[in-house]
Image (cartoon, rainbow, N blue to C red; front, side, top):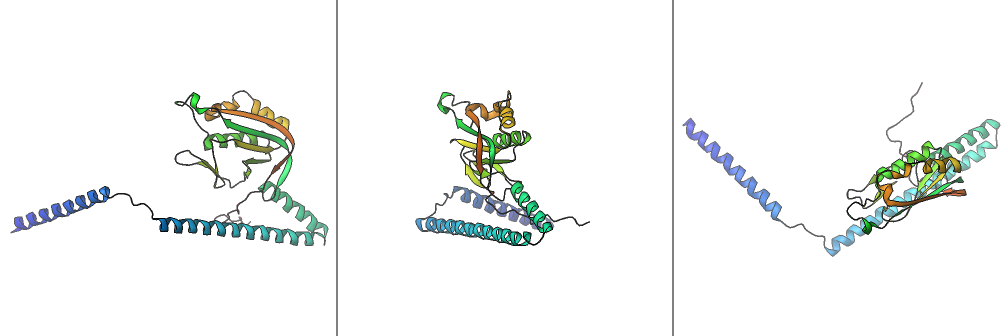
Length: 238
């Protein structure tokens, strides 16, 4: 009797396995469903709505920052201590990239050479090259940097897409197939010297680009376009 029960259990197990294998095979055979016109329109509407919400939040953030600045200006007129506090806050905003900034520095242009000349070995820029250039400029004393007018801040992320078709800087796309412009504010001679140093511009895919840089007395770098996140960190109390 026990042997017969074991046989039934084995049969049941094989039956379940057979059902699962059949179901999995059918799932793999089913064609990938494409979106209908109505579904595509709804998706585009949702994207447009999210973009609108993003712009509204950014506008609110700009208004709040202006309110704070107005309060500080009013407070600064009351005492010398408040004036010093306002000056320190203005300096902090400048360093954090919360305001537009200008000054002398260099402009660097990176244009891909003709990929058809060496299609087997040609490499486009990735996040590695951009991060490398930002670090080189910072080591040379750059005080503010932008990539295609996207401000590099303490919370800036630079990451290539999965297929390397574009690079995200502050969650905005930069195409490595088009001209990339990097602006840096600082001592122009030191920045130029750092970029002209032998081997600096031979880093991986940079060899496949026509790279030029020149000094400018008046460079404008826009402020960081996103709101800073402070969800997890907090001040350490003494």
